[in-house]
Length: 387
Image (cartoon, rainbow, N blue to C red):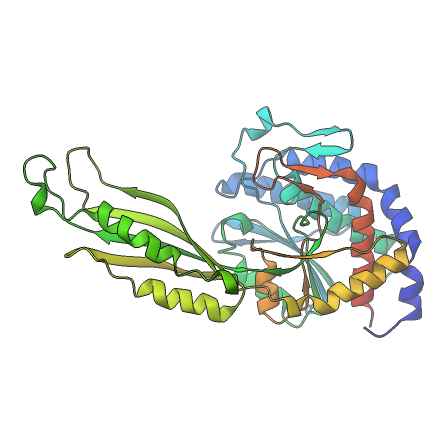
């Protein structure tokens, strides 16, 4: 980006001081969101979570987001100014934790560690988005061209929000994805994901009286499993992993159906397409067994080249703020950053919380990183929003 003296004077250690001054309020805001509970499958809970995020936006920024409900799922969009944003902060507030988790895993803040369902993935990132924007606003920087998007179905594949996301980032200068960090690193590349179900149809028969008249779908599927896994290519970074599987209905019946869920990951679109083609060509070595394949490519890969420019800029911002350089990491997990990068928008991911345990019992966020990373986000936003 071309240098702008007014912006460069703003991108200084004063941003770090401003972020630290807001830290106690940020911690309270994180608690508020965690204690709502917003599992993806419960749309009423997701709506309550969206309402709490909207309330925070009003309190911290004096602006009320639009609520866009798509197929029953509420998403929030807070635009400042133009209909064509320059910068989009990509968030989600749905979590993987069912209602009631808070009773056994309450929000806590002990010894610099925050715990609670969704605190790492990714409610801390949502709060950082709002406060980074507030820091710039308080410093007199225009938020013209900023969009803060908070979706409600990322954890279940962004089925209803994908089109909204792609429309929002079209033509943007940057998408900053507020997912949690990878051991403190920004995420500069992600694998694309594909999801399939392989179903084998056989023929039922009595397991004691006439098993020879059956076609055992369980055995047929078992023989296919090594072939399915072999569709991966370790050198190319492609994995094809059979996960959840089942067969049969009763203990004395030859199974007439067996099925397995397949998780596919690849670093390039070409590899995704190869796996997609080859998995659909599967046939059973068991005579009479029929193979059916459902599912498809879900998220394209976030290729490294889409993050390079923003990642280099992040190092410049870190130096201007007097902060350590932030490392970059290439990861196997996917996010909405896959969609923004595939849309041709420069994308930097993993800009949210530092901690560990996404989707796990030990989920936590480290408080010491919240203010510095919020200042980093504010600095990057200032640069990309500048004319």
